Image 1 (cartoon, rainbow, N blue to C red):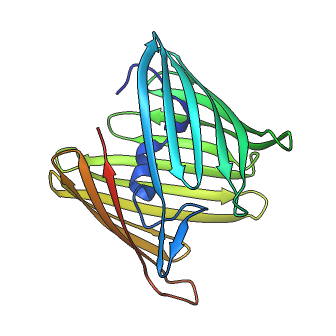
Image 2: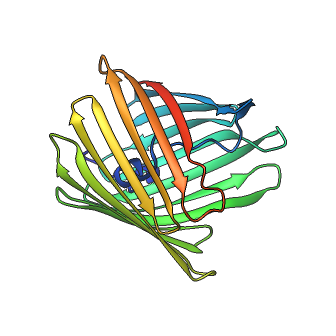
Image 3: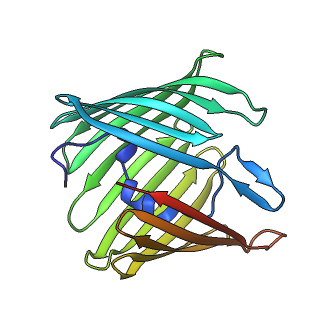
Length: 243
């Protein structure tokens, strides 16, 4: 575990990786050609530009892009970023985002706020805390201006095979609705990872990811919604180059 709490976006990140990362999802804005939807993204990080500071640049074409400055020490993690968020009309609007996290590598508490510059309005107001131990990683966060409560749990069964289970429970206070998402992952070989998930609304997804040369990864993912009228499965292929 790291020596500090990290940044707010890292709360519950291992559970979110098992449940959401690399599945057959498309960004809000995407290119469409015949039967295919596609987008591309890249990110880079500069560590320790000065002691305690680092920068992160992320871009998803044609969806969004942002530049983030982070300050980290043993007990705090503060970040601020400015980004351009795309809309369905093809316009890009600037958004400011600030977050802070206090605590240690075991227990942390923080908040996150986003400000939409054109309308001068707050578009995101979140808060939460995280707990990390060798046996269990858990988090409890409030979203949608404190209307949605999310609890995540992550347990690594076997680090040698990357075997892990994760659960997220989501409850809407205004709608009084609760949803559950359960996911598992397992590496059959060091470079071959299998993941699967199922949620209480009837959606099921799975993926298999194959790594090459420890840097290049190809992922094939599929998803089906058993609760929808159209039960046609979705399939996707992605490629990633990682340091």
